Image 1 (spheres, rainbow, N blue to C red):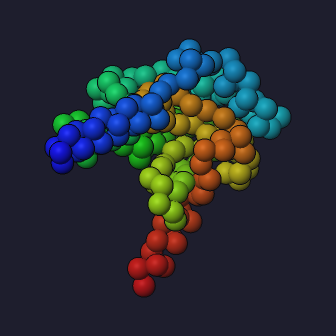
Image 2: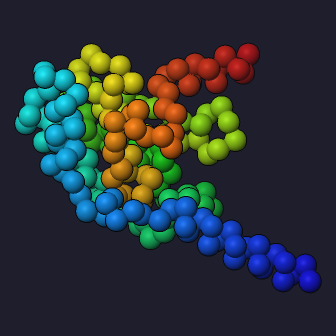
Length: 182
């Protein structure tokens, strides 16, 4: 009886995790033009060329990382594979580190990259990402660039429209965690 219960529980958990990671249809089709436009809406000072370049790289590099990380499952299942050692990379902070590193190679002049963390202070799984803002603007004015959420199919939205996560600057989260240790 216990084996049947555990097997049933395992099956239900697998179905639940798979459904949580379903990629919405709109995420499957890159919207480089839409992201370019949203980046330009950040501020009149944002270069149209720079916005287009960042949008194109954000999409193409996310898909490149998907291939490099050998992502074949929804994000949470891929995380489990990374954590048990059957995949080398693909946790959210890997995606964020790699995307940030790639975008920094562009020596952006009118845009600023921020790192953000959500759920550091609750029971949900902590999540890391990159936020893009106009030069000199705070993270709260930025656009979320999240390649992890849909396993390499880039999610993006103005930060205030990303109701799934409450993003905070990574440096503030690190300072909070350091202070808690003392």
